[in-house]
Image 1 (cartoon, rainbow, N blue to C red):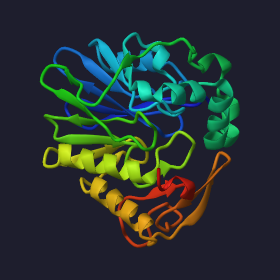
Image 2: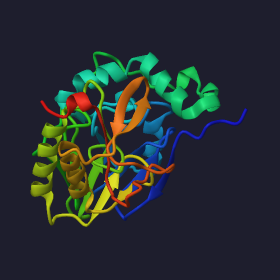
Image 3: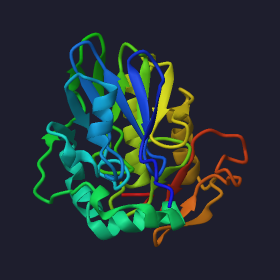
Length: 279
């Protein structure tokens, strides 16, 4: 049986390496002159720490954008990890082994059988993260990471500005297919307010956008596009295509083709619950 390749990576700038995990989730290794930051830790399958140590010799700090099963499960392998405390419950729910296995089965299909029991990184319930909040910054030596909000997808979702790179990591906060429908996500009105605040705080400070899925790249107009989708949902101008994901029922705001691209040629999109439009 052919082994699964748990990680692969590509250098996308002089200081940034994009790492792809087992289910296509994306992580980012940012290297300064003095230290490095790893943004997100994937599904917790395979030895990510060992893999990262092959990419950099600098001490590594981990920043988690949020606590979901495909972004935070490898965190316990690292010594210094930061996450917004508002996502503590999300992390605890998603670190349950049954949730992790269900997610992997959905994405891997028959290849799930190739995942070895010893390749699961334990996610201890007592694991303690350092707080990561909007307003925090990390100076790595020649490159600074500034932490901003973006809550909606999860209560503690954060976004990160790579100042000298003029790049904003939106991750799962705002993208081509933003999930905003499970029990932990915020209502649409609050999410829209948070996006507008993020837009005001970062406007004119970035030329590129990075995401946590797909090929990882997006237009700098992504925030404005998703804000417009919020407005269309509120005014009854959304297409509302039924969507099911891991037992959850929701609606895709703007109709998409087989590749999940908007049929109308628009940029961002939202998958939302009609029960969570208003507070």
